[in-house]
Image (cartoon, rainbow, N blue to C red; front, side, top):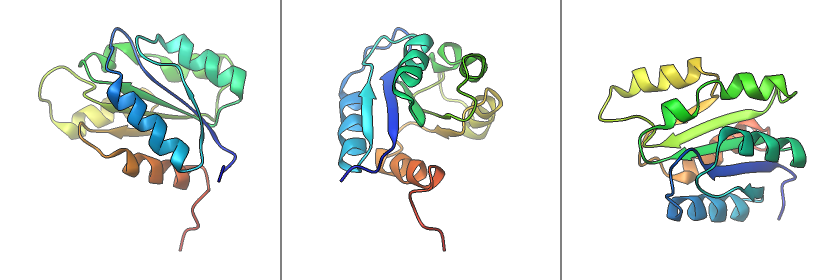
Length: 141
């Protein structure tokens, strides 16, 4: 059953990891989201343009090759410049080079304007529950 919410997903930058992207797509669709999958090797503006065209509620950026920090810089600013002031921005995967303190990584991405930041190995089901909560689809106690 559809929940009425649209989500843009894809793999940012020069990253071509497609398997995880397909799993994310499947889990989100199974949970009722309308998913627009822009695929791999996607620049920021592909995510943003897809969000504009579809009037999306959220963008989920994946990166596994470690350069997500570079690829994601100024994404919130660009979203705001084109009128996507309220869109949810999530990012996850292996988003930085090497093993770094996770709290520091998370803080840097939050400072860049991402609403949620997921460490490597986080099950997509956790992200899906956060997305439902953030979009008001789950009743809170």
